[in-house]
Image (cartoon, rainbow, N blue to C red):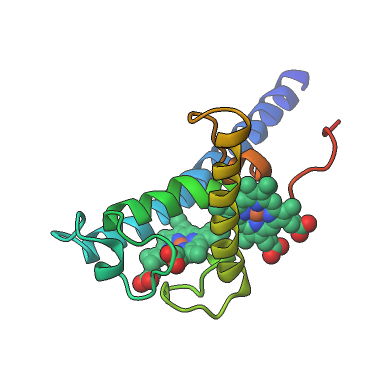
Amino acid sequence: MRALKRAIGLFMLLSVVLTTASLQAQEQRKKSGVIQELEKAIAGRENEPAEKVFKNIKMLKGIPAIRVLRIMENGFSPALGVKCTFCHVKGEWDSDEKPEKETARKMMKMVGEIREELKNIVDEKATINCYTCHRGDVEPALRPKK
Ligand code: HEC
Ligand code: HEC
């Protein structure tokens, strides 16, 4: 009887672990799927200036188009701990409908200004980015987390 209970317990634990793992894998696939689609859409034009390849670039002008996708995927999203749709209307990447997108532009400007100021305070190498404040959160912390 006890052995049976233990076997059932083990089975349930295993299925929870497996479900969580497969959900995570699904999430991963979905996310990289969006990026893959966008990569396909700009294929052959990866190194052209971002503003020529995309429709509504105001801040990230002059950098290769592919870098915009890398910034979105590896910079903004993980820095704030959010999905693309925190700032974007799904599938309408050029739309400015979500106020968070405009806020992100203002944040980019602020980061540029802080970087300039840092050079005067410390040295040329000193820098910050979105993660410096956000640390995977929409709201930067004001005190150490317990
Ligand atoms: C924190 C906000 C934020 C997040 C999160 C974010 N983006 Fe963006 N995205 C922006 C901003 C701001 C711009 C415009 C940049 C500019 O004006 O130079 C932009 C521009 C873009 C563009 C160019 C669209 C066009 O045609 O002008 C694409 C494509 C894009 N993002 C895809 C993504 C994808 C995919 C993700 C998720 C992996 C993502 N973004 C996550 C803020 C965000
Ligand atoms: C110097 C610190 C600092 C840096 C660097 C910084 N942020 Fe922020 N950001 C904040 C603070 C503080 C808030 C306000 C959070 C709150 O209390 O709602 C904020 C808010 C935001 C919001 C609005 C969230 C909402 O609830 O609507 C977005 C979007 C954002 N930041 C994006 C960015 C991006 C993208 C970068 C990098 C380009 C960045 N931030 C860099 C401090 C920073």
